[in-house]
Image 1 (cartoon, helix red, strand yellow):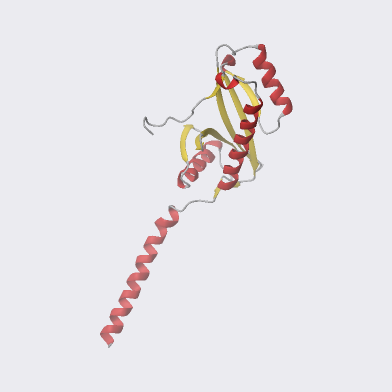
Image 2 (cartoon, helix red, strand yellow; image 1 turned 135 degrees about the vertical axis):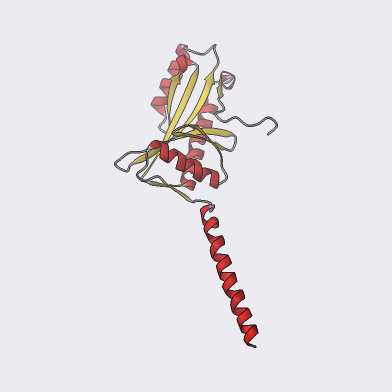
Length: 189
């Protein structure tokens, strides 16, 4: 009977010790629900954002020291933390569009971008590269911590705004302005 009790005690202790060592790596690999970027530089915040999105199974890649490209559905965004010492921080979401040479530098393009900036408040539209690229930039403001769900909803909101802008454009515009992929995927994927 003593041997049985001793054996039972050893089994219980070994089970407890085995559980204790397995818990630590499981916590390190747990899917985060928030991204805490308090007291970080833009570069540190981008690295933290990148790591959190990877752990949450997003397709992401670093595209600069303070920029992270992420795919949401069929669309790609470049996320750029903009950290402020006062604690009011932002994440900028950028999408880039190539402009057909026929439209580059045209008065029509300048008027269209000006009208979009006057009428819309979900994003700002910029002309880059001498009219060859349109940059669309939206921002989400937060204090130190942002949930991944908030980031996802922010990107969906921005995407929906851009979809509505696209449907309001004259017919054929989709042939003159095309999204630029910021992430390269291997062939065959």
